[in-house]
Image (cartoon, rainbow, N blue to C red):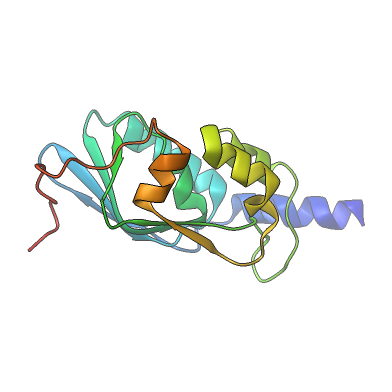
Amino acid sequence: MIRYVICLVLTMLAAPALATADIVQGRGYIVVNHDRGGNVVEMVKTRARLENSGQKVWIRGYCRSACTILTTMRNACLGPRATIGFHAPRIPNTNIIPPYVPEIMASYYRGGILKRWNEEWRYSMDMVKISARDYVKLDPQTKICPPGSKDPLAK
């Protein structure tokens, strides 16, 4: 049984991301738009690339699952109407929560978000959605994109 779980975890970690982000590169900014999450290890790599880009990262629309680790980047802000969604990380098409993945995700959270993650959300099979404003209430270090800044994707 242990071998089976280890094989499943390694397969999940090695698999490409299941949900791809709509990441748009602009002049001096990057927009992450309607990101459903996906493979946590791949998102850790995406986070490193975005955080080290030297550009502002605007997270807008919905940001769910693995995407939530992007919210605490020093160069990120949440669109005022963004929705952030949390749930237990799972091996695809199962209810198996792989070892270490919840801890990897927790390492990127702070304040009330970390507390809620550790106490509730990491066990939830259902998506728990919160608004950008509620997110900031739980983690005041996270920024809402300033109202004066133009949403690069707004028409």
